[in-house]
Amino acid sequence: MTENVTRRVAMISGASRGIGAAIAQRLADAGWAVSLGLRNPDRCPVSGEAVLVSRFDAEEPATEAAWVAQTLERFGRLDGLVHNAGIMLPTPVLEATDAEFDRIFAVNVRSPMRLTALAWPHLARDEPGRIVLIASLSGKRIKSEKSGLYGMSKFALMGFAHALRQSGRDNRVRTTAICPSFVATDMSSALTQQDASHLTQPEDLARIVQAVLELPPTASIAEIPVHWTVEECF
Image 1: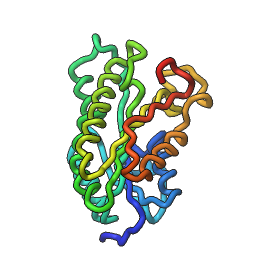
Image 2 (image 1 turned 135 degrees about the vertical axis):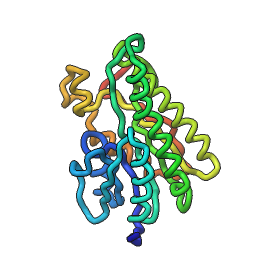
Image 3 (image 1 turned 60 degrees about the horizontal axis):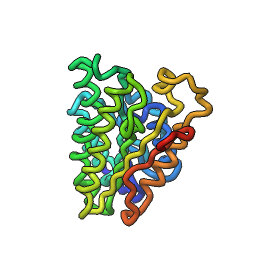
Image 4 (image 1 turned 180 degrees about the vertical axis):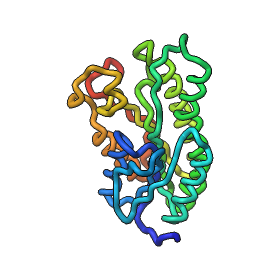
């Protein structure tokens, strides 16, 4: 049954932990209705009457259409889409197998492209919607050999973000790519020896995502690089 929802509605992928969970909690606390796409719906980090949990797996295309349909059936509208789900394979490009290439591009690029196409008509239907892609500074520069394959996928995701910006020129759907360096999550803990308390926190990014989603279409932001310290370029 569709609810008569007046609050804004956001879909967030990969929201079971880390950055996605922080975004979900931040938006729910701010009065948004949130639709969370999780591989394991039992691991939902947020509860409340305006929370929908759907099974979503970036490697299973059928779950994308089902999630969008369930969101619209429950809330009747869509105002924001946050692409947070992604994987990191620490593989140098000269060692990457076809299977590794296919998997990382399927999850980090192809699934967001399909999911956006499904959500786009609904983002543009009433008030102009917002799309946020959690990309990476690895989508703007490659800092290590083992980040090569991952970086290639994030460069592609950045290209997708800018293509969406052009697609939204007339209907005022705005797209922003947020590009963090290391964040204090389980993924980063396996890649860096830095003290997690010194890294960008998931809650820091959640604050940025909320601000971007709540901007009017007259404020169009292409990219937001975020580093936990001072890097030579960002």
